[in-house]
Length: 222
Image (cartoon, rainbow, N blue to C red; front, top):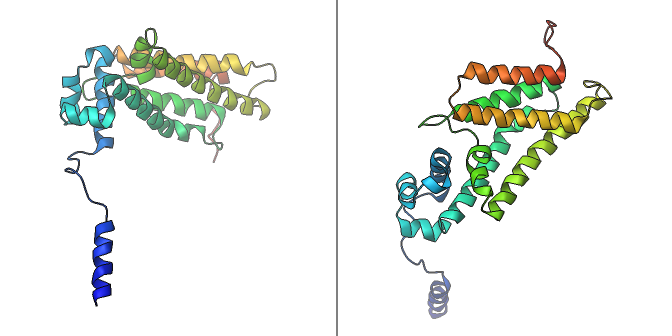
């Protein structure tokens, strides 16, 4: 009995002790709120008070969890890029034709860029991070990486389309990728300027027709 008591006491002594009060907020939820705040107002115009209010936490909790404003901005941008990779993944289903892929990419972009509680937010990369890239080398690297990733992904898809005879052998897949990516960026800018959805859809359709040729009246595949 004494031995069991001693073992129990020893186990109790070894148990980790909790320090301080548990967080009264969900860091992932708060980071999402910060991402929205930066997308609405940009880096410079979004104050720490704005961020604290949007995230529902006080400044000590903000600093303790996310670091300073710049650290929070980078974390929010990373969060955005991860979300967008998930959001656009379905457009690259290998079962889709090239036209279907592009149509889905642009439809998704229009939906995302027009969304926002305070009005269309556009794209974090194009409308928010790019404005800070001039003065901040690290943010510039993030932006260049994001833009390059989009173009490489599109070029890979065009290469596959060329191999499947959806594009002629003479097609320059790198140039097509630049055109397709530039259209995404144009949609982001124009959505932020609150152009109507119909205008954005017309831009998207024009690019798809330019790359794939005008749509025919053929029945869709079963």
